[in-house]
Image 1 (cartoon, helix red, strand yellow):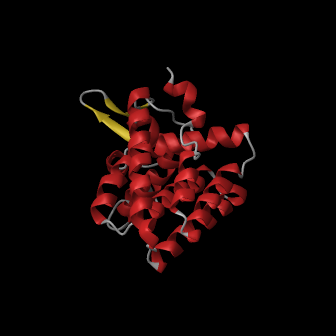
Image 2 (image 1 turned 90 degrees about the vertical axis):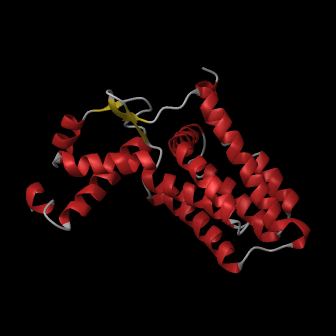
Length: 226
């Protein structure tokens, strides 16, 4: 099927999805780096599509916090300052601690479905270590943290948390990639497994201690210091 034919009718949606998936994979794998300009002409040639689905894919990636549309300057991979990254990670940490305290303090237990979602997320992380690419690892990591906060059953908390996580997705993926290069590839999954086990035990102090040791910014330290 040609690009022109595919874009006629339902095929347009699939071309948008394909372009979005490929760009996400290249951004989260580090092939496209923060601040790098995304030139439409180059991307349409490389992806074999026209501008309409590419522009829609870029719009959707902008909503996800992975690209930025700059007035009169085009589109670039999202770039946060060291201060932005530090503040957003700090906010993420505070929201996660609040979620855990809401979910587990006073002998409370999360809903079984919420616990199952967390268990599935950590299993996906472990599978991604051995058989997944950068996108699978980043997606499993993001799902784990969403599932962790969802334990609280607090809709307004989730509405506050999700935009923070979206803005940090690129930097969390970068941190995971650097960690895997510096240490055992499964270290990140093991860390999340320990956190998961603490949640299942219902031990709020242990969960908070694991979160404090989580190392979300460990391998971004040089970047944060710049």
